[in-house]
Image (cartoon, rainbow, N blue to C red; front, top):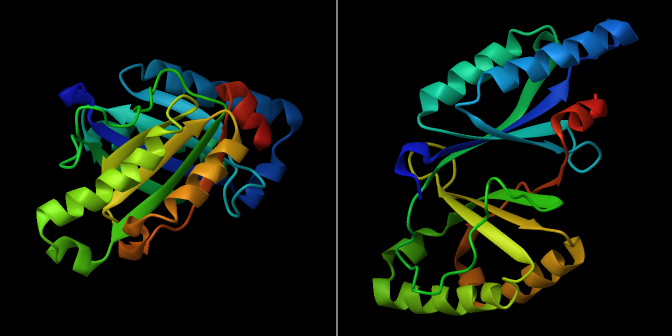
Length: 222
């Protein structure tokens, strides 16, 4: 992991009703300006995903990776100051840090590659129960091993990324999975629900299913 690029944010956008006042030509010009703003901020790794019809209140999502929270904040500010940005609103955010898991062994599940996305991304916040954190570490590690072993059986087709959000967001973790088959992912989730670790889940909602698209295609969702 590049320690200088450990900050990640998922920013979900919806369109304001005012966007319908733009002519077709004005909307296309606004989209080009928006794209140019993203391309001008090459120090922020950015991937775009369409979310329209897959989650109420959101049209698309930008997944960002940067050296600091400040860089992400200033970047989003600049986006909202574009012509298109004035007709958008942020409907949901997730923010966390990439760090080594305390339970990770030598053969942890395959981690997502930010630069090589699959067709689908599923991301959600996650929080464990109070009782979980008060359990002895070795007991927790044993439970997590069984959980990870299930995930490893799908590692050829599904990759994951775990972000830590303790103290900097409303949740403890942000969990994301990339895959080319939602059926495979659903099977993985159903299998994981049968492990002991499920007893210690306090919350894992909302769930966002996103489709990876080039930025220009993503903005066609507006």
